[in-house]
Image (cartoon, rainbow, N blue to C red; front, side):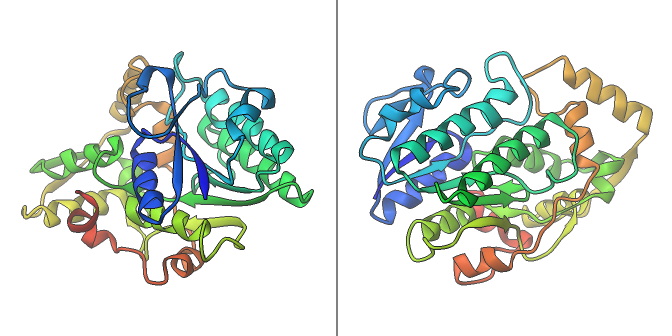
Length: 296
């Protein structure tokens, strides 16, 4: 198929593009005007500004399916979270309905139900709109909600690996209590390939998670063991210092740590991997094997 892939130059998007190409699809990679390069089929787009369906209709000519892999962790002037997570995806979905591009695969996130963070509310709004279009019979979508996605090239993955190399780890309390189910970026890409191939009839929300849950602190400890290091000394960062560090992060948009990140860390990010594993045709990669299989 001819597939429009938004976010094709991002961490997840690059892996998805490679997997779809290996599966024989023609990938039309959506890229920011700032990141255009010669070579592959590229479609200029700006998720900060393309908030109308009319802006997307010309880009859907000849397209059979759309994969939306655009996302940001926090708000910024260059990439406003309301536009990137809600207004532009909604415009894209409406354009797909108008153009007759019925198959849409949208990457959302686990842990957004019940959360009041801007990350969660904007993600949830796009999911809700897409599900409404499905109920109207206008689209045939699959919404992927992954837990923590791990792999080479991911900013959060690099942060986890750097923390794993430290002999003494100082963690905020939420990292020692809230649970995650880390998932390989390659497994996520393989599920998308299946959803555009043998599992193309699958629709609705798919929770994408590894086979076992653990706390973030334990996950980083596992990464340390996978790197061949001994057990680290883990210390709990006092809550006042945690709050202060998050507020300092608010002032530096380029870093992932901020008060919103701290709030998101305070809740579990887990799900039922049954449908995800049906798409893969096997168990998802266990967190204890992520360095060997996904850090490459």
